[in-house]
Amino acid sequence: MLPNANAPQSKPEAGVLFVGIDLGTSHTAIAASNGNRCSIDSIVAYPRDVISQKALGKDKLFGAEAWRHKHACDVYRPMQKGDVKYAELDGALNRDPARQQQAVRDLMQHVLQLAKPRPDDLVYAVIGAPAQASIHSQKALLDAARGVLDCVMICSEPFAVAYGLQFLTDTLVIDIGAGTTDLCRMHGSLPAPEDQITVSAAGDAVDRKLFELLKAAYPEASFTVNMVKGFKEKFAALAKVDEPVRVTLPVRGVPREFDITAQVRQAVESIVPEIVGSLHQLIGDYDPEFQAAMRNNVLLAGGGSQIIGLDKAIERKLNELGGGRVTRVQEPAFAGANGALHLAQDMPAEFWQQLDA
Ligand SMILES: Nc1ncnc2c1ncn2[C@@H]1O[C@H](COP(=O)(O)OP(=O)(O)OP(=O)(O)O)[C@@H](O)[C@H]1O
Ligand SMILES: [Mg+2]
Image 1 (cartoon, protein in one colour):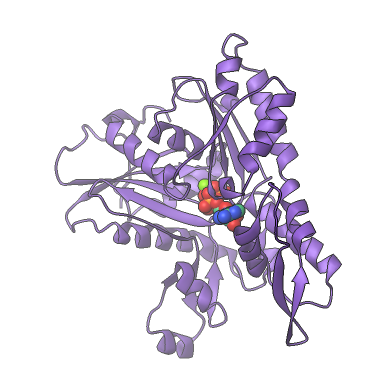
Image 2 (tube, rainbow, N blue to C red):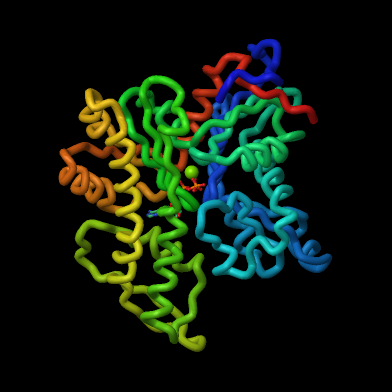
């Protein structure tokens, strides 16, 4: 985030809608200066032929509705990133990579409409991107935003979370998303590349692991990776659970109950070592005078922060390395978008990039 050659002369005070957009692999959230906010699954679907178009009565579907009609549509999860490709596990997804860029643009346009801008509003948007988004993906985001947004700034997702909660000094943010976990050290100024680590130990990796473990344990059962994601969201826990986790899966069309307690636990545990390793690395490289403060200021964000007991599991690991305290953000679905909105309202003109239509 540096002063920009294409910056507007000044930032307008009226006739402008500021928005923060968290454009995630799994969910997209928007928070706007007119008080509107919403969150949807990052899924876009286009009816596959004239029949499906007639039946559905529209040419684009979004979020949960898009997924419901996946058999009648070409379905995109356009923000896919990280090492785990959902498309490999569900053949219905992302059939035509050339249309992914269009799907990103349509998704942005859709969430912007959900924020209800007035027709004549200029839209200034801060978009949260992964901590180490490559130049290529930043360019792809800007290209997708052209014609949808007027002025844009891209910032790292964990930075947006910390900014929104005013955790700006000696804080370490761990944002456990779907495609990636982004870790970012905050020291009172804009984070530099060496303050950030992105790893693929995140929600999609848990889904993939659980999918594979269940396939190995119960080869007779039929299920999709999306069903497995649902089991994880309902049952993922690192704390001791009293009740065994039982789910119903079809076996050659007949529903049967399976105990998946051990598999859920093993899948969730599989992402912890890499996250803690990166956390340790970022703390260990920091100024030794302030390491203790940072250790006690670990902020856990993103959908994956809802894994029951994950905060305590990370604290236990930190204790082996000198102690620490982990706090979970209150609203994981909106923490990134809220922070991005605060940034949009605070950042002066020179940091913005004006987009030509
Ligand atoms: N209750 C829950 N328990 C465990 N995991 C959950 C829960 N709710 C959501 N998740 C997982 O959190 C992940 C989504 O998190 P989030 O919405 O922060 O990701 P994202 O911002 O879309 O992804 P990314 O930041 O990687 O682009 C998904 O893998 C989802 O399955
Ligand atoms: Mg995210």
